[in-house]
Amino acid sequence: MNTHHLLFLLPIALALYACGKIESKTAAAETPSYLPNAPAETEQVLRKEFPGAIPGHEFSDSLIHYLQRNYGIAPDKILLGASTCVDDIIYTKNFHFHPEIKGPFHLGGLAGLPFTGVSGLEAFAHHIPDSGTLVLLVEPHIGYSQKKGWGFVLRHEQPEASSCCGALMGTLGKLQAGTLKAEISEDDYQGGKIAELALRYKDQILNAESPIIELTRITSLSAEKQISAHVLDVSLEHAKYIVIITGVIINTDFSFTDYQYMDHVQIYDVRKKSFVQDLRNPQRHATAF
Ligand SMILES: [Zn+2]
Image (tube, rainbow, N blue to C red; front, side, top):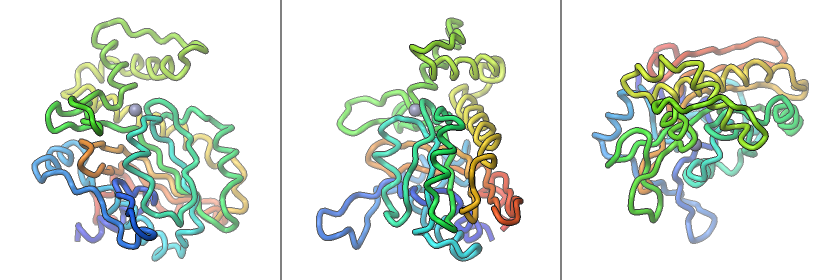
């Protein structure tokens, strides 16, 4: 019961996640095409660390279908908010698939932490369509390069893979070298906050089998905590549902689609003032659906 249920779950996430759609040169992209999936052995590597990760476009299709079928949410009533990294690869390979979905409103800064803060959430909440749904995608990212493995990705028209997420890899390098300092300054505020987070979990990161994967997971949890602490405090009266999806975007080399891993999915019913769904790693525990 897993594959089908899996797909239903996926939905939760981001409708936008049309990862990797290639724009049609002809009329209005009637037959969307996608970047191909990564080779099977690569998918296996991705899913070993991020169970159930699937191509982004499958994720967005499933999400839309799931929300419509189970909650009567029309795609054109969805506003997407993304707490994702500012790295250009995120937008280049994602968010283009379902133009009927509004957004994204960008809530994230370096590494995908929600640096726009409470002010960003408040501004964003005012843009939700009447009786609409806010879908929040809270996700740092990590590259997986065929050649160099985790923490790297081969970008378009570059000869070698480069670090990805650059902010997290840079932080990790300094942490490993013992030179990382949590100095919060106006000159490098976001970098300082990421350093502060990494130093708080220093031993856990350095002792992990894959420190960059560990740092990515810690960043994801921290971003979720920050969003969850404030999202229900903003003006939501005119909205129907708030969908919060926390996970990790896995960037693959430029010729392949990106992948989507969901760690936590929460659906909040504004009128009932309660969460009507709360699933941890729905892709792994697909039977929950
Ligand atoms: Zn990044």
